[in-house]
Image 1 (spheres, one colour):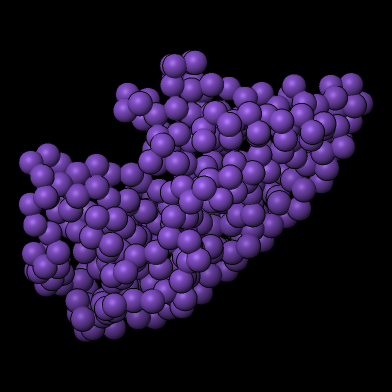
Image 2 (cartoon, rainbow, N blue to C red):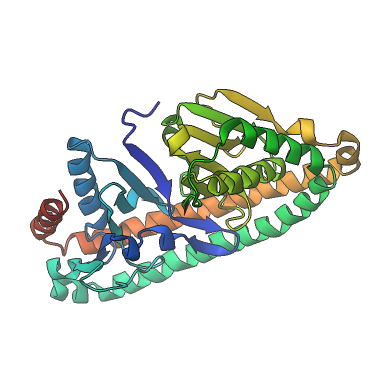
Length: 360
């Protein structure tokens, strides 16, 4: 179980078969009186360290915090969100570039280039350029393997879908909705969209602590995510219809269609998918739903060999994609070293202290 229920962990960007997919549009809402500190600066300039310092200050004050991690380096932060204060701080550089929406009114830019030695960086320009290009090439190879994964995955889904008893799944979803949802308010609930898992240099990372923050947890054992996605989409729409605010997390392997987890804070309730990619071995669940009960075994047997063959290929493609992310991370670490030796981190710490004083 998470040691602090005030802390939740997510990704807002994902490595996917269609390339990098950003949900940073869910970061903050200026029209609802939010304010965002947007950090600009190169690799190794202290963006993540600054955010970790701000997050620690929030933890010390027992303030609810959402930590947004980087899918290309799950040890680094991309953003920190304080929902109750309607304030966030985020890395505004590529691949999830952020620019102010209402400069000064709803957001402001924190430029860490003010803390570096431009002359030293200029002297290192050849190495910086070469490392940046090398890093980009590894990311490209990783995306190509994921793209191939996506194509074969679609072929597998077609074979599985024929064996799904959709009426049976829908009826089960209705029973779940009836069990949990009562009209809460006359308006629809609000939805935030994040990722709770990511394809990273360390493999598939899923934030089980975030799920364990919820008292009632339903896990759905579903290797291919078809049955679970139908159930979770129905839960999603019904929860919003009945006025509940929810957090919906999509699967990075299909970030537009495949729901992987739904969190409903007001009910202290979570639904999450478990499979061989992330078996949720550390999650305490109240009930486990087995997707096999909704499948026609006869139809699945017809394509059993094809599905098994595809699975072997999918595992190899995902493995190679992750290997290239790890190579990219290794190069990125060297790139960070070039910037670290040119930074005045005392200035960065002062920037962090100023932000902490303004927020808290």
